[in-house]
Length: 364
Image 1 (cartoon, helix red, strand yellow):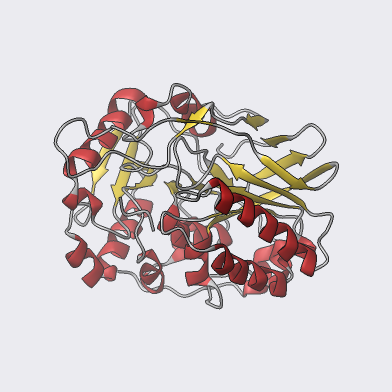
Image 2 (image 1 turned 180 degrees about the vertical axis):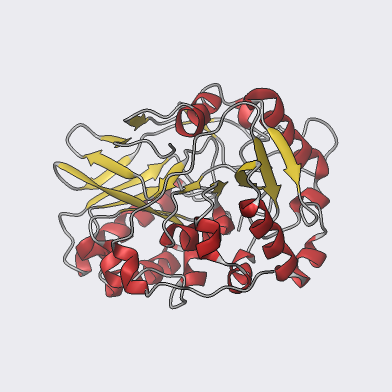
């Protein structure tokens, strides 16, 4: 998702243990750190190098980071797709390198899950790095989190960082989550947002975005009081790639989770999203989770967003979760600016005060 998104290992822990594993926090970033920038899914840097380079410039100039590209980072989409093992080797090498502090995805796509059979996930988790990306990168964020690492759902280099300077508060958000952590961090809605970029094929400023829209607020659909738990989630279409695989949580994992989900730029129909959510209900997620959050749906009309809200409430009710806290239209996923959500960090949602915050730092 989001295109405009080896060492062979095995899962060495029974899935039932994922519910009780402690999450290791990677260390915070500092100016001067080296970040590996990889293309685990789609070859966007090859197709749109100006946009990719604009994102790298933000990492270097705004955050003082050193960027290290790997052999596959700028491969063409066809070459990348034909060789998941080469992509896996680069990702494995980045985690094994003590000089690399973080791994950032260049962009999403729809193919990262094919890396998983070629990765030694326990070895990667034993060398904690800050792994950041969204959309198809969820296919890597989730398995590494299940092996005990806090991972980060957030902006990619080409879709997020390249446009970061267009949003006054976005850089401060990145610093607060990744560079300057605090014991608590309250998420706030951006005053304005966009759900499209200027055509990347056009000459000119590669960081241009579409028309800014005023935020109409989060939609508090149901719930009372204060609920808390560890964050878990990602792009709902990409999570479908993992269901039923060795890289999907066991039933007991979901207890007290703050689950976050969002739709991609492919704009799945409300009915399709209902089918996916129905499966979560069958798994027992709604009866065990403490909160369900939905990101702002990219490309949906106001009428479609209203239908999505109605469907979500009706679907969780079918599984008896009428007191589950449910909030939609939140600032994560395939619109900009987007929050960074750390899988495994504890969060708190207060339905009375209508607040959402982390209650522990996501990095050490």
